[in-house]
Image (cartoon, rainbow, N blue to C red):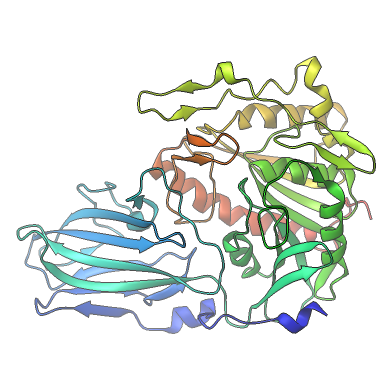
Length: 447
């Protein structure tokens, strides 16, 4: 049985325990202290309170942050601050006067991190170890002189969380089972195009009281390295597996998706049984990238219109209009019949999504639902946010290599606006799933 492979992360610590730990302060010979409250250890999606003490009144300093991702890429950020009359700086209330962000931004050092390698997207694959953020206070007068430093350990798993590498029949991924007697609502989490597996979103969601299956579908372990076609039966097997677990509350499960995995989740909800709630982030209303087959039926993908791809002055591609119109008569065969779904939908749309026209696609999906007398959906729009709407304090990614294009493209978004959107969106996800996956209120799923 798969449970034999269960393991718990050594770093795992409960949210309540984090709150009980006293804040730490690191100082050097200067007498300046850098404090991270309530503790230098926290979960990745948790806010921390950063203070600097022991400075001269109205002294100017630069507070810097640095972290290295799983690919070895270093990300850096900084804020320039002026101490108050007591020689203190509180990032909760003091404005940054320059650096990688400005204004009062308690978590600006985290969301404004920029890669030293151009166009790199922050990569964190598994949830076992924390991300280590090195924070330093630098003198503005003596360049390179470090007055104080501290490390913020931002982990992923609460105490008692079970992380189970999954190799069950064809299914590959990682299962997260939260502590407690259960049963818990079950959710399948799928990431962006590019293959492999990231456990960040799934694990952080599991901390909120969900059994989460982070599902890989190519480019992982013995799954195909590249993808030429997909079969929906694979995702059907994943749904059936999750629903049968004794730790999972029925009758249906949820699906959390983004970008390409969004149209996969739409197909799952429209063709398969057992899906009660689906979250789609910046997704398309039609099948994209690969043919999708199910029981002899094949849904062709939308094709690219290379004439509409433009090169910006910086040499980065703008592919926002690069797909043919999903609503054109000749492309109707790629549309996913969302009206067949018997679940609740939460559509999240970024107003500055440069990957594709996610706002247009949601308009078409909701219109199709309404045309069939269905109103079981919610739409949240974040003007100014970019394509990769992820967990709070994840560094913003405006440009990066596109797995389907094979070149660096724009993904859009204003970093500051995007950061606020991620915080708001992530708060709404567990609320949505708990509302519609509770067995007393979930009545929509085809069983």
